[in-house]
Image (tube, rainbow, N blue to C red; front, side, top):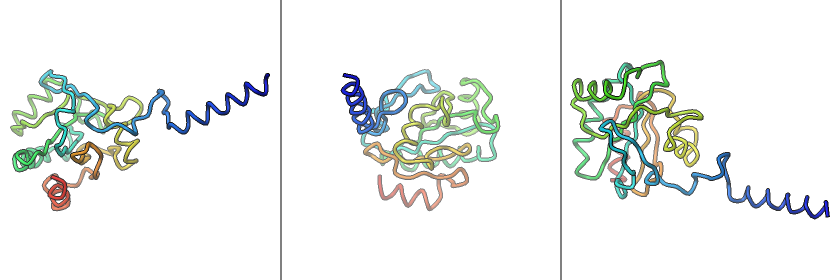
Length: 187
């Protein structure tokens, strides 16, 4: 009887591993970007499936960073390509050098006052580690470590199918030839 129970336990473990279950009991491997929700600075919670069929540039942002001036080019990119179904989506995070210490209201006011931002920006979230927003956990699980931000203004390009297409380091400007070239391919 004991041998049979051990055998059943081993078979169960093998089956669970075949289905690639993560620590919390389910894998994100079969999800897409469009399976998640996000709370915006406007107070609205959106289901990202509203962006289904669109290309998304997901950027973790911060108000007090050396890269903060990229807000201007993120807005320019948004204005240039939104009619071609590009969504620029900012996600404020205070995980890098304490460079986003303000409240969500302060972040909203900063973006509107200093950069005339009108692309969607979420409330402040963690973008790496155990408490990271699920979108970032998903990006890491489905694309790899290059999807994990190393600093503010890290960029993740999501294709129309809701999969990570490419990632860009903080120093890559949103209006760079590198990003524009890839956008033109997948828009």
